[in-house]
Length: 476
Image (cartoon, rainbow, N blue to C red; front, side, top):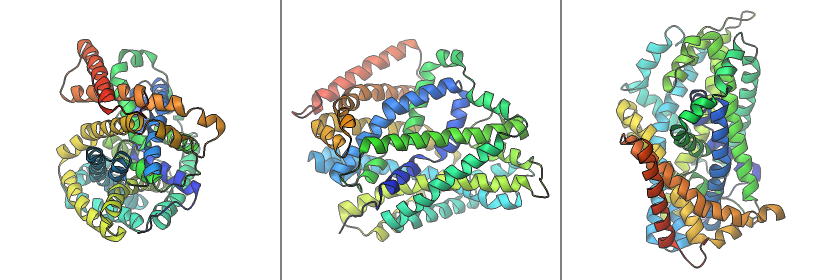
């Protein structure tokens, strides 16, 4: 079976950006920024994107392009180890878990998009959201509709489905966000919204740094779509002449721009038309707060601006959600196609049937949804990226640096060794610390003593992993 490839470099970049750009950017990122010190948090986040996210992204790129396989097949082919195949298989399961909760929210967004032209939720945004969110046949039905849209794109293949779809969706998302941000800037209390969003609260950052750091790291991993093997899968369709560092920097940059733009739309509107919702967060903020703001928009020259702007906004969010969900589905589809020779059609249909069941469990139980969408996903993504980077640094080692340098400029090639040291040594230490902090936080363990214990345990685990995995080609 001939393996598909991207038709163009731009197609790959837009597909990867589409995977990264999703609900984490459009909604979670603005609120996390506002609640954790404004521009002070933004600086920490950007630092993690640059120092952790981009090197980690390139680590997944290296694995995918070198092996031309899905995560499980790639780790097995490059190591010859059944154990590493199981690690890659875990990332395939992570993608299924992600899609299970993501499609529930995608269904909510789709429903709001379809209801926006009539303003069906304008009269009572809160009760409307409560009535559709969990535990109803409609919540399952709209999740299924979102999954079908996702499956239709993936079913069409890499070039005619994913690449073509994201070539349309990503420019549309950027254009519409720029237009909305420009329009929001002229609303009555836009300045207050900007101050809430981007005002630097260094005192809050300093006092809560150890709480903010894992949050910023989790946000960076989620929004860059790393840790679940998405970028391994997408890079497996790449040619040898592409500069991985250039592509990675472009993807991270565009991803961050979308997140910042989303905040420049949301907060001016909230402070101008629904200030009572400006301090809230989570799903209710998107589906109640911003809906209330749209409901209060005045008509202009006879045009119902609230309905018009709501339709455009939720249209943008729908496109962003779809561009991410197709990458989540592509991971297990590629796994079945590569490892078992299943046709793309059978793989897509079978996985849609499986995810429909797991999605329904999330849609019917807010407790299940909350655990999976929060604690479980953060831990799985952090653990996944940790495993991938240990593989790059200690199993591939100098071969990874050679793959990094292919197609790159002379200056970029000189960065291959420092990059390998970062992903093989420094970042695993950071990710062990982040992972342990998340686990202890979930167990209700905290405090200064526990922080130092976490540092010691993270150092011990890193050292043990380095010694156990060391080969002649390893980074050290």
